[in-house]
Every structure is written in C-alpha cells, then in structure tokens.
Image (cartoon, rainbow, N blue to C red; front, side):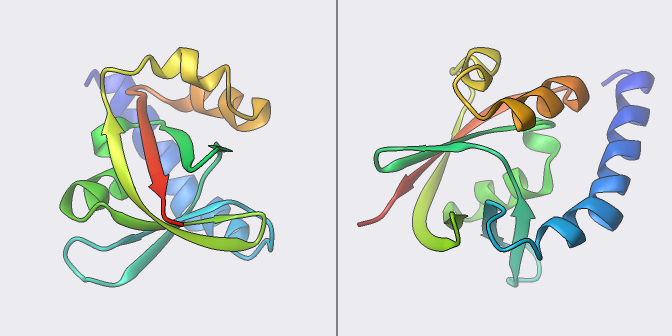
Length: 131
C-alpha cells in the first residue's frame, strides 16, 4: 500500500472508529454486522451498508483484508446482520473474484459512494443468511 493510501486508511479508520461508528451503532435501523473478535472472542458490531437479496446479504469492504471485521470473518465466518432492526444469523464469505465496483452499483447509492470515495482495497462480502 502506498504512503498516500496508508495515510488515507489511518485517517478514515480513526474517524470511523472514534466518531462515526459509535454514533451509527445507536441508530435503530442502521444495518450492522456483528462478528466475533478474533483475539477477544467478544462480539464486534460494525455499521455497514449493503443489501439483502433473497437469503444473502451483500456488502463491499472499503479496505478489504485490512478491515478488522474482514479479519474477524477470516477467523470465524459465523456472523449476524441487523437489517431493518431485525437480527439474522449467517455465514460470511469473502468474494475476491467478484467485481466490487460492479457490486457497488447494485447496493444503496449513499453508502456505495462513500465506499468508492474512501476505499483503497475493495472486497465483496456475501453473508448467507440462515432460515
């Protein structure tokens, strides 16, 4: 990763971690991804954007395998997704062969615009929902 991308990554993730995510986690209908911390074993909730399509939930990670929730998924793919205020259990799959820019065109516009603007290593994630 170039120095410019690294600086961008640090600035954006610091803002998200300290300001945006704590606020967004409290919004009742904000979509959340809950992973299990790979070291702590504690639940970790991250505000995300994406869309449910049938029994799958699709999202695009801004920083690919550098994202903490992606690293948690690699350690334990069992996740929960809160969509429209309801929690759904599922299994997450990293989709490196999927075209994340094409995928973003099928997802909600506001979040997709932010992911394209701030992201440097886009990675598609599919969550297969149970029941």
